[in-house]
Figure 1 (spheres, rainbow, N blue to C red):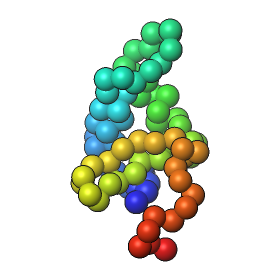
Figure 2 (cartoon, rainbow, N blue to C red):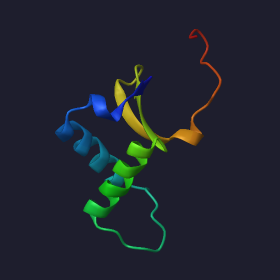
Figure 3 (tube, helix red, strand yellow):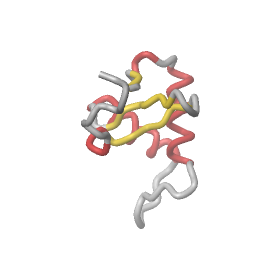
Amino acid sequence: MEIPYTALAPDTLRNLVEEFVTREGTDYGSQIFSLQDKVRHVMRQLEQGKAVIVYDSESETCHIRQRDSLSTRPVSGTL
């Protein structure tokens, strides 16, 4: 289920984005960005609708995904 980033409290959103950008294996290429730069970049993508927050009810966790990477097919059992 997609969660609008505007529905989260500012501190919660910041914590989610920080967790995302500091996750091991996150690739930023050969350039070095500060944590603040990475957070701003992801926030901009959320604001522009290029990235979305997705809640997984099975694991009860939220993830940030690129919108174009989401499946357009409905999941079995949902409309």
